[in-house]
Image (cartoon, rainbow, N blue to C red; front, side):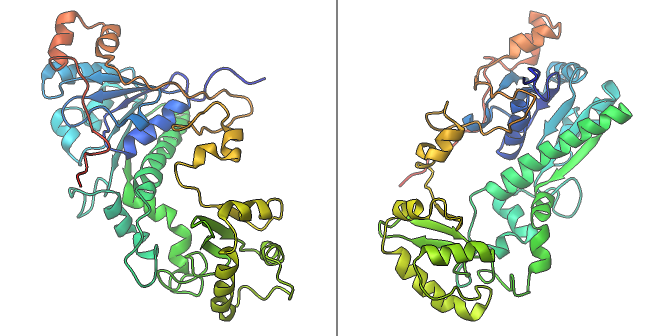
Length: 381
């Protein structure tokens, strides 16, 4: 029987972040049961709807003494503060790590930025694509004869940013059980991308990854790439290992023995043959044909196809579509995604701290409305 307490039950997180990486990271922690209070006001406001799940929203005017005092008071009972401002901003606001540590020595303070708290680029503006560029990842992704391919903002913002920050925070929470002390965490999205690139730096310039668009995992190898099918949809083939490649070869009905697929001399002819063969049938016909054959063949689903897929539905039967809270599954502990309620909890949260109505009015911007980033922006044309 599963334990009913969630993994991070009792952990309180104050989230000052606004753009994609921080709100995604704090949502992951909220999914594990942490109480996440998003502190808006000024530049830091309500995150985009996709990342509101399981959070409360507090609006504070951090340019007033009352707003700063209310935040400090809240920090006394917090376990974690997350912020994504450029280095020095929270210090100027009066809520930097040293200040908050003095009122709560157990506080874990995570600063999540693109370039980190130090270095020549620390004060520069940037987005996912810039951090991806500095890490070398962008320069390694895409076709050999064109510009690098941009993998949405998945790599720096979400993997190297939000996920990396959540991992760092969990590590600090674990260490605090031994030391009884909090600490400051400097999370850089460039550093997160560098971590993700660990395997590929040593491969660069070698046969496995000689240059962008060339090598084993770039789409050049005929057994590790996508193919256009008769209906124009894309089929994924990932038959790297010899056993899987032989299953692919046999599944395509080729009578001659499977060649040495790691011999690059075979790739050009094999690619042409595979392209011709996969163009005979629709994508889904090929998926059905290879079902159970262990050839690592799958559909390249469009986003609007994902949640009607039989496997996704089997894993998430409760969902009729986006957003699906794809949570870790624990054998003993219960992890349940809470609903998104992007409403202002300012009065509720501040009243629980013991603030009077008059104090709340001074701390909260007029109107008591949490505002924030609008996504998607209004594109024209």
